[in-house]
Image (cartoon, rainbow, N blue to C red; front, side, top):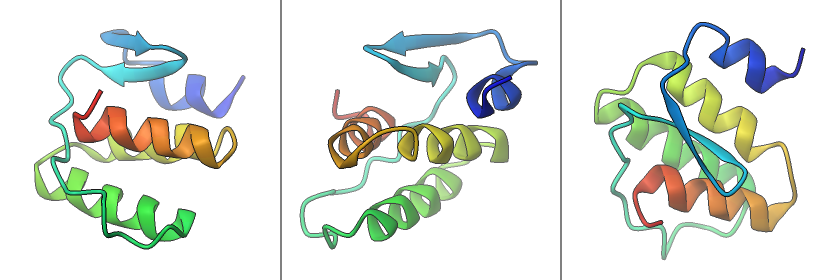
Length: 87
């Protein structure tokens, strides 16, 4: 079972944007990604904090983090943009 499946196994209300799973009830982070350090850890930390601040549950933040780490740097940026509400 993949990490994404483990996080979403009890959640079946999500849409797929390209290859990125997005919960239907996700509240986008809504932060300005331009200006954040280009370091992957900084982007993930800023997004996780923002997702938490707008009221998303822990399982959604975990899903964001697992998906961010499931590809290369370009994939991480696409996941951040989707969860930020930019795509």
